[in-house]
Image (cartoon, rainbow, N blue to C red; front, top):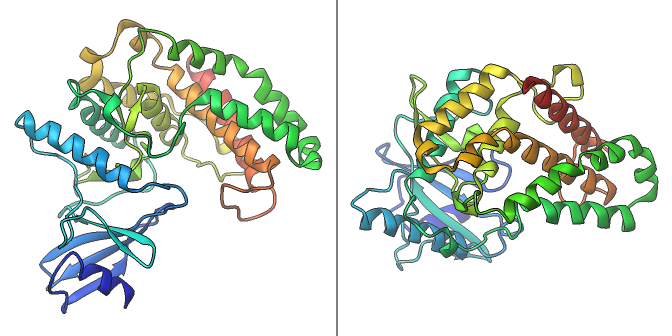
Amino acid sequence: MELVKVLNKFIPDTRDAEISTFGNGLIHGSFLVSINNKQEFILQELNTTVFKNPYLISSNLALLSKHLLSNNQEPFFPLSINSLSNDSYVIDQDKYYRLTPYVKGSHSINSCSSAEEAYEASFQFGRFTAAFKSFDPAQLRETIPQFHDLAFRWKQFMDALKMGNQQRIKYAKKEIDQIRDYYHIVEKFNKIKSSNSFLERVTHHDTKISNVLFTNDGKGICVIDLDTVMAGYFISDVGDMFRTYLSSANEEEQDLDKVEARKDFYNAIIEGYLINMQDQMTVEERQKISFAGEFIIYMQALRFISDFINDDIYYGISYELNNYNRTKNQLRLLEHFNSILN
C-alpha cells in the first residue's frame, strides 16, 4: 500500500499500522493512522494544485513555533512530525505528505449549530492571533498569493466580464448588477490597506468551524489546518466566521429563504474573539468589526460569479448552475447580514 510506504519514511516500524480515511476536507486527503491501538497520527497528502509551494507552509510553521518557544510558550496547535531524514514532509511519486499528532479526546464539527460553538471557535482563533503579538508577520510567506485581496478578486471579476462566457454573463445579469452595486465594499477595503489604523497580524485565513478541535463537552481546544496562516487583517478571520457560522444553511442551499444571519451567533463571535484580541486592536478596528462580514461574504460572491462566468474552472461543481446558485446564496446572506446590523 502506497501510504504505508510513505508512513515508513516517518516511522521506522509500521507493521501494525492501521490507516483509514479521516474527515471530509475539500483540499487535502487526510488519513487517521493507528499503531498498536496506542499511537495515533494524521497523515495528509497536500493539494499542490492549491498550495503550489508546500515547503512555504513548513517554513511558516517553523517560524511560529520558534517564536513561541523563544518566549517560553509551548506551541498549542499540532505541528508536523519530522521524517526520518529530518524533513517536515515526505515526497513520494511527486506527492507531498506530512504527519501530525492526533489530539486525543478531540473531535471537529462540520457546521456551527449553536451560539456557544461560535463563541468557542472564535475564542480559539482570537487566541491564536493574540499569541503572536510580538511576532513580525512580514516574515511569513504567502502560501496562496493574494488569497484575501479583495481588489485582486474584483480585477478577476472584471477580467471575467471581458473574456468569459457571454451567454452566462447574460444569464447572470441581475447578479452581476448586484455585484457592481456593492463596489463600495472594495473601496472600503482599499482604504483599510492604506490605513495605519488597520494592522497586519498573524492570521489564519480559513476560520470555518471544522478547523477547530473540541472536547467531548463542547469546549474549544485549539485551531488546526494552518496552511493558510499568513500576514493579514483581522477582517479575514472574523469575516470568515461570520460567513460560515451565521447561517444554518451553507453556500450550497438553493432555498434562499433558509439563508439568514443569526444575531446571537454574530454577538457570540465578536465576544469570543475580543476576549483575546480587544487589547491588541485599534479603536478603528473595533469600530469596523462588522465590516469583516461584508468583506468576506462579498468576496466569496465575487469568486463564485467569476468562476461561473469562466465556465467553472476553479470550484468543483455538482451541476451546471452550481456556481451561479452559490452566488445568489452569498448575495442573499450579505443582504441579511446587513439587515441584522441595523
